[in-house]
Image: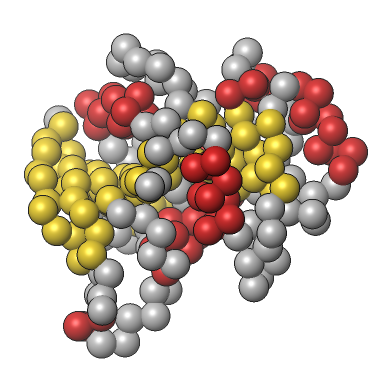
Length: 219
Ligand SMILES: NC(=O)c1ccc[n+]([C@@H]2O[C@H](COP(=O)([O-])OP(=O)(O)OC[C@H]3O[C@@H](n4cnc5c(N)ncnc54)[C@H](OP(=O)(O)O)[C@@H]3O)[C@@H](O)[C@H]2O)c1
């Protein structure tokens, strides 16, 4: 059984990033530290290639004591550059690239030479990485928990496919106005069909509020 936790930081008005894709940092330093604690509590941390290209995150545990989780980048055609931090910070062997057969073999060989692992997975209907296949492959590798740190497309896809079981959302007391929303189209046309958060725990980190709960999908 794989536990998938969705984690993101948003403004009060539900924005994950500015219209130009800037998101570091919407939350305060206390909640960023809590994010590192959550990383240490999961076997793997996952982001979509959009987040990798926008933020070039390290996805390591630095602000608290703890082990680094496996870093999983979901990248159908291997768009990530070989200069990414996750390949060049001395921990490339702890980086796993989830790609499809659309990824260029020469580029795949190059990232493997740096030390990263590669999973070539089936595609979904849109030619992207099949998320059920990815999660099954992680289970085979002994991974029991994954923290998904974004971005919006990956989070939305996991919600739409009902593959996530927990949501931890950090709400910073700020308004952005126009910007990128955290969660996109879920096909909800009836208020009875919204995804709910149950057993909600409320935490405070500095000025930020964190809601942590179990995802309940409509029948
Ligand atoms: N505030 C926060 O907590 C936070 C956290 C993370 C990111 N962000 C912000 O979010 C923005 C990036 O979000 P994003 O939505 O553009 O990108 P994303 O969700 O990080 O990555 C999306 C990409 O992942 C790849 N992918 C492969 N298989 C997929 C699948 N089955 N479902 C969905 N995606 C799949 C697709 O690219 P291919 O088709 O090429 O594979 C897709 O374009 C940035 O501005 C970043 O700063 C904010």
